[in-house]
Image (cartoon, rainbow, N blue to C red; front, side, top):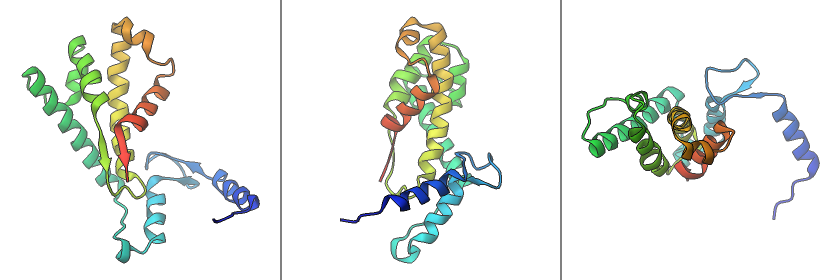
Amino acid sequence: TITIPNGIWDELFGLFREYHWAIHEDKGGLDSLTPEILGHIFEKAVNQKASGAYYTPSQLTSYMAENTVNRLVVEKFNTEFNESVETGNEIITSKNPTFCEWLYENCLSNLKILDNACGSGAFLLSIANILFEYYKDVLSFLITANDKYRNSIDKNLNYFIKKKIITENIHGV
């Protein structure tokens, strides 16, 4: 058992409070800790050669996340409805209640993304950002169009979506 005195925790949390924690790489100033900075620290803290641990830059994780989620949504939708949309956004902007309800109930809510070597979680964070936008757009429409969603979705939509993504959609090892 390792025992760490409370004073050390106080110092560590005090250090953390000195910084602005940013989720997006491009938001924040000189005092911001971004996922890219934390990934770089993670990469340097482990023995890369022995463990094979490397941080993937945000541009690459964003590209992979967008192409993974968007392609999956579009392929599932086109197969289900015999349509030929090219982007997931087309489904939402169609304002078709059947399409939007399917997107939420049968696609997004059942989507599971596993990163079996998540390290600092950069890829999963990119996936979460893409899913957040999908959920926000489709649920905003469904809440206004359907009492079922208006009455069952938490009043704090952002919290509801983030909790759903973290507990149901993304998984890391």
